Structures are given as C-alpha cells and as structure tokens.
Image (cartoon, one colour):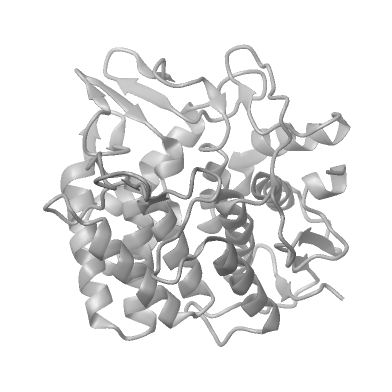
Length: 382
C-alpha cells in the first residue's frame, strides 16, 4: 500500500470534500434519494458484510455478529436511504440480540456456538448506534415504531450505563465488568457525540445527553498520553487517582480510539481539539509506513500498516484541523473496491464510509456557523 493510499488521498476517489469560496451545498438532515455513487457504496458494503436475513457479519473476526455491527449497518442503511435493508437489519437484531430482559442488546452472537450468545453483557456503543439509527429513521421516515424503540433503548442507556461522578457524567462500556470498587473503566470511543445529539432531540427533557457531550469534551482534553498526546483505547477514572491508562488492556491508541476524532468531527466540534492527532498522523507522511496502533507508554509503533478505515479517519482529521487559506482544499477518500479485496473487512469498510458521512456533517455544521463555507461532492471527483 502506497503512502497515497495509506492517507486515503486518491485521484480515483469515490468521495470528495471541497472548501470553495462562499459556495454552500449542504445535504438535508434526512437522507435524500441517493445517487449512483452512494448506491454503489452501499451495494459494495452490503455485499461484503450483510447476510440475506439482516445479520451484519464481522468478516475480520470469524464472521461473528455483534450489536456494534448491527448498529453500524442500520446507521449506514439509513444514510443511504435503504429502508428494506434497514428493516431487515433491525428485525434480525431485535430477534436475536434482545435476550437480556431489558432494552439493551447482547453484545456478541457467534454462528458456530451453541447457544450463539454465551455472554449477555451489552456493548454501549452498539446500543447507542442502534438507538441513534432508530431515532433518525423514525423521525425522517415517519415510522413511530422505530421512534418508540429508540426511546426505550435510550431510557435504559440512561438508567443503567451512566454514572454521575465528580468528573461529570461517565458512560460505562457495558452493564457488567467495568466497575471495580470506585474505579471505572472507560472507552472514549463510546462517546458517540452525534448519537447524543439525536437522542437529546428525541428526549429533550433528559439531562444525560448534554451531560455526556460535556464530559466527552473533558475526556478528550484529559486523556492524552505518550509522546504524541493521544487518547487511549481504554482508560480508568477513580476519585483518588482521576484519569489514567487502564492496566486491564494494552495502553494503546489503536482500533478503538481511532473513532474518537471520527465522532468529534461528525458532530461538527472544534477541530482545534484534534491538533495532536492531526500532528501524529501528519508526521507519518515521513515514515516508512503508517502504523495501526502506538503504545502510549513506550511510544513503540505497530509493524502493521493502518487499514483503509483508519487511513480515511487520519485524512479526515488532517483536513478538518488544517487552517483554511481561503482557496480550495480538497480531500479525497478512496472508494470501497468493487473487486474482492482480502484486506478489506467489516470494520475497515464501516470506518471508511463513516469518514465520508462525518466529513459531510462537519461541512454542514461549519457552514451553518458561518465558519467554513462548504461544497461537498460525491462521485468520481471530476
């Protein structure tokens, strides 16, 4: 993989964002009829991961399914206005993952196991993506059943997964296993800022959603480690020690924390908060390869190159963090391949498509605030 590919800047791109003068072309809050390129993106994604019954397969992890994947699939199906696929994914999800007796989904389903669910704990990011997708679909497609399902899931997230602390409202990664005495184990990539915003719209009386937005901003400031001052995949908080790296997981900025800038940008937040990340990824242009993780204690880097999804987020972060000179800045994100590609799996494909969605959303937010007029272009970039 070349440096150009690693940073997802491609002259044959399937997605581009341009900042041009004062021209504004903003996508609607609800998905319009999709064009040919968007249809191709969804078709390629669905061919890679989506089974006929609505199960989203984690092709990089033994073809298991999990609430994260189902939520990712629903969010993408909504964006691409694929109502039948959305309904199939939601039907499989509620049929197979809602076994806990509440409105949180069991986190993992294994096709080769009996029973396929051997751990009924939830994964909060999956619950958030499912609730977010249902809330959007209910509002935009006028489907009250989706709205009510979103509300029930949101209620249980607030009731069972939010802890009020002296550091603010903190989000548990799951209902069990992340509290040891007064020490809480946290995953900052579970702060899905645009999901919080949509659920606040759904439940304007609920204080938890704006509180989580605020605590996420605090965590992005507090959780910076290593030479490059990066957020970790996993951290802890306790009243005695405050925030620290977790000793239960590798001390890395890697496959989890890479989503932190993605969700921050998606909500249109201040890109200056991502300057350290942009500097880290920018420095990699001079390296022999762009690693998929870095150890935040030793500063050692992985010998594996970052896949397409991480590369797309790196390019997006650099793009949004750069200062505009008033001219034209262009970001091109390499499209999902139409040909079989053994290096492309569910997670990388999901992140690549989400990077495009986040770029479009950031463009809209900046335009609405009068900060950065945007023109977003989907297609071959000609």
